[in-house]
Image (cartoon, rainbow, N blue to C red):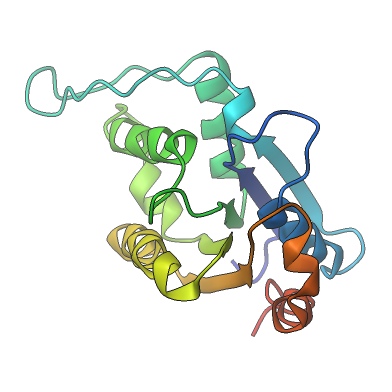
Length: 187
């Protein structure tokens, strides 16, 4: 990965209505702005994409076709990235449903004939940027995302948490804002 130009894929997973910037996305924008000039960034808002429910064929058909439509767009973006950043507020102590659907499709992508998805994912780092009203209540979600990284042998970049709540609340979290300035930079 050291000879590869860094390419960050930001997957915004909030289901907030379009046109309203949430705390998590605002914090992610601060982290993205701190990346070196010219760093390739791709942003996708999962809730604005057509993601079909995942159908588990592992123990019946056993394989999956190459995805089409928005799923193909996401697969291509995932494989093109060197770093994947989940921009995910805490919903009921967990990840929002669009991110869960995307992750479920990873199971299918690991079973597309001729696609070495799992092997390619091991070369990408995974980060989480999140906000919630209470850090302790975010921990189950953070643990879940870290386990996803470990399952695919992906380097875990860690989680950046900010105090959220009403729109704009995270901007008052001086510690999170300061951490955002270096969170995505190579350690």
